[in-house]
Image 1: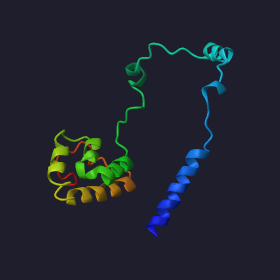
Image 2 (image 1 turned 90 degrees about the horizontal axis):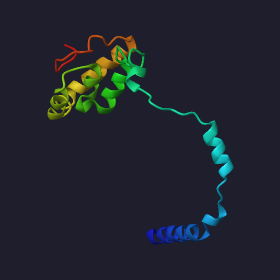
Image 3 (image 1 turned 90 degrees about the vertical axis):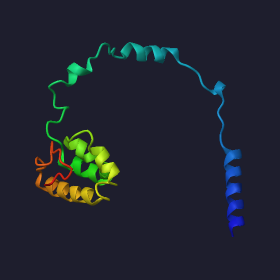
Length: 137
């Protein structure tokens, strides 16, 4: 059975290899007039200052999104990324990492539940800037 499937796959691969349409470089040509028209109609962007463009704008979040914090906790909560998103001390990732995701995942699981409840109620202000290892206490 395996031999038949293998031979079938080989035959299909050979068929695909030998029946493909090949293109050659001499089939293409460059239309200089349309390229010149694109350059004349294009806009020139020079000296764009990103710092001045984003300072004082709404691009910087003043309050973390509860659903983003919940999603971070769900996906990479074992390494404490959600805590950095909420604003905690820089060493929190090491504490989560070396305790196997916060005491073998217990802390991360409770963080996940608390962030889910906070996201539903749209209030995670108690967890923002919290620097203790157990954020809900």
